[in-house]
Length: 360
Image (cartoon, rainbow, N blue to C red):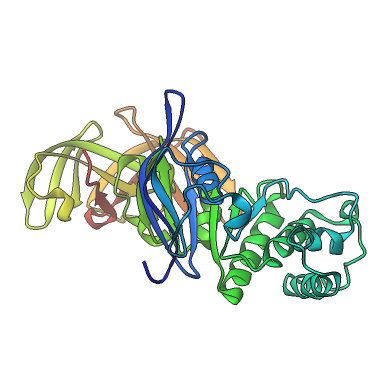
C-alpha cells in the first residue's frame, strides 16, 4: 500500500504449541509513531522481532515499504533497533559506537565520520565524540543508541523498551525528547513497551496486545476514553467496570442492575439491543460529593488506601457490596480537606461519565 512503511498481514508466529502472535494485521503509515503495549508474554516483542527479521512468521507476511520480507535477512531490511540495554560497545568511544553500523556496511572512513557527527548533532551530543560509554549518563547513552540507529538512514526504527532502564524523572524527559526527535526527522517509529504511560505520551496510535492478538488499535485518546474490550479497559488507565442486566431505559439513559446497586449510564452504539452489558467509569470521573453536591449515581464508600503520585491522588474505596472503586483527585481539590483511611465518603458520577463496552 502506498504511504505505509510497515504492514503485517495475517502474521502468525508459533513456538512449539504456543501461539505467540496470532493472525494479526497492522498498517503503519510513513512517519507514524506506533506503540505496541501489553502484559509480559503477550507477543509484543515477538511482533517486533518479526518486523526486524530476527524471527520469521509461520504464516502471513511482513511488508516493508511495499516489499515482502519473506526470507529477507535483518541486515537487508533497512530497519534499525534500539534496545533497553542500549547494546553499546564499552571499548569504543561515542563516535566509534555511532559509526559501527556504517563500518559494517562498508562506508568509507571520511563519509562515516561525517554522517556519525551529523547524527550526534541531531541528538544533542555534539562534542561528546571522544567520550567513553562508561563516562555517560543513562540519558546520554540512550541518545548514543538513537544516533547509531539514525546514522544508517533506516526506513523505520524499532524501539524495544527503550526507556526501561532509566530512572523515573529521566524517563519522562526522554519521552518528550523521543517524540520531538521523531517528529523532527519524520522517521517511522514502532515502540514496544509494557509501560502504558510511555505509549500514551508519545504514540500517534497505540496497539493493545493480549495473548497474541491485537485487542484495539487507536489513537491514545480513544484507547484511554473509549476502550473496545474489557481487557483494554482493565489494562489502560485506572478504570472501574460495572456489569449487570439492563433494568430499564429512559431516553438515552439505561439503568443497569449491578452488584453495587442500580446505576445509570448513557447508551452508545454498543448498548443497542442488549439485555446485559458492562460499562466503564474512569477513576478521574468519580467525584467526592461534598457540600450537597449530587450526581446521577451516588454511593457510600469507605476509604481503603490513598496513593499520592505528585499532583494526583488515587483513592481506593470499598462499596457496601464489597466491590472496589478507584477515584482520582487532583491535589487542588483535596487541599482544604483530604479523606482519611477508614472514612466513609459519598461518591458518584453522572450517566455520561460511563462508557458501555462493546463486549459483555
